Length: 408
Image (cartoon, one colour):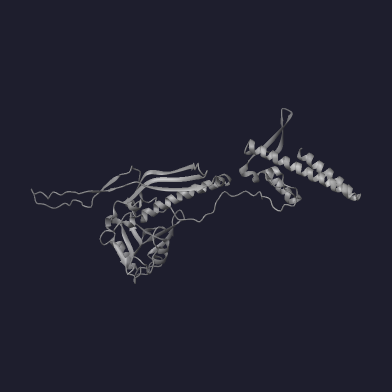
């Protein structure tokens, strides 16, 4: 039975039923309405069966759009233009949109083959799926990442990499004619890199993986990569080292003598303390050293601070790209969320800002970040996993100057 045949039979039955009502023949009217209900049930069952067959044949349906008449060498040729509709965008198809429009304007039921549901669709149904396209974007709470990773030195050697270091340099002396100088030795040490595994895995059920939008998978992978980046940057700043199976962070190093500037519990951050930190930075490490702190610390401690002449020492300007560029006494400030904010009365000594040349930190990646998707055979869950082997250490701490707020 075609849709046109169904509509013609239904119209004829309703006309006969109306005639019985006009003639006062209620028994015949009820019988005729029963025939109408039987016809509707038969047509709905046929539509469902056809929809199920189409679903088994293929995940796609072909929807005619329009006939285009063309003429070739005097002959009229009728071309049929079609639109391939997949299950994922069924409700964005032209056929469904037209059916939805007729449902809203004229009350016509949406054909069952476009709904593929077990319940009968009647004109009294209140709602149907509104055929508005879904924007392929999942709105999430943003996190600040990617500020630290591009600044450090990156290497990719096998585990056990050793970088020679030395804190002693030979000195030259003035001597008389025919005299020699004292022979000097040059002891060296090394910084050895291990391989710690960083892993992030997210599991979703088979049902969720099947019915969600394609953008869901993309967002999931982006989340995993962002989590790995955040863990790396956190370790670069405040990693505790091998005992916790992670890289050793910058703040785990003890600054050289005189390069730890302390502020008493009753004291506050002043221009003199900032000058003391700059003075503690050796001249040989002047180039490349930048400030690290949180945005809370920068805005509450340094913005608004002035020198003896009343000139602001913290500036926020806009570069060529239009992004804010923050400086303290002309030195760049790198904001991050991996440190503690400045507190007027901390419960423990807190490093709230530090100077450091990020090139003096080496992040060695033994295995680059790898994304893998696999299935748990026991539960059919779909697992998205990222894994990498990495270690990091400060290879030269002489550019490190810390500002520490004491708790007593």
